[in-house]
Image (cartoon, rainbow, N blue to C red):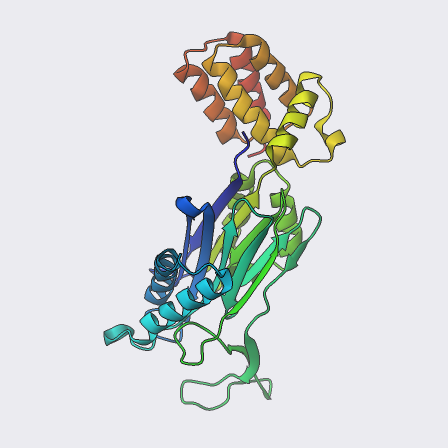
Length: 341
């Protein structure tokens, strides 16, 4: 059976910071078959940016689980967020006055839509298997930048204009935006702080390439590695990709057994890769050379782009199941040498 989703995440502090002011979290609420993913970005001009974002992520998930008696999801999300806001507002001591932005999704994994919500200038992007689009709107407005003494900051004789937040967790007038959107098979969402998306003028193109690839995690980490040189802020992002369904799995398997090109089914490469991985592990466990050979040849013939890490995982599984077939082993080694990542 194909997994319901793939998910990958990463985070890095700004240059010179010992602690990242962003925080991210995702979890499954198994008894409700719900996935929650959230990214928060602590406002650096307020106290304890890291603690604000950590508190917001952890407490939202806690309250959302506690509020499961509320059957209206929009009300459940809103109530949970208001509780989090009160927690932040009531924080005393050195972290008094802290605040953070928030972007998050709640997906009922048996449904074809997801809820998304936000406050501030962190963003959510949707990839619908053809294009990437931003589905949140930044809660910002232009303001005059000021020096530490309160006087206007100028450059070349002109006052510097920056975007200031109009909404965030930790302010009395906090009012989240909550909406829902179609989330179909092979669709993906990117949930990220402003420090991440500001690193990439060509972000939509990059995310499209990652979302249609088999190596979601490896390719995402390759992109994230570029943050090291480009960043001037904390950077955090989560990508969630929904998989195909069981009927698609059956059709794909028929194409594999007949050695037909999976692209004729007009499905993504990640779907075919998931089928191959699941079936290959079953074949190794049963010491089924014929099926293993069929799958490995299919990988080679149609250039299924498994990463070095994934191919190494297959080899380790062969050893674990004591399936010591030289032909299969050598072909996997050959594919590993050719792998780009």
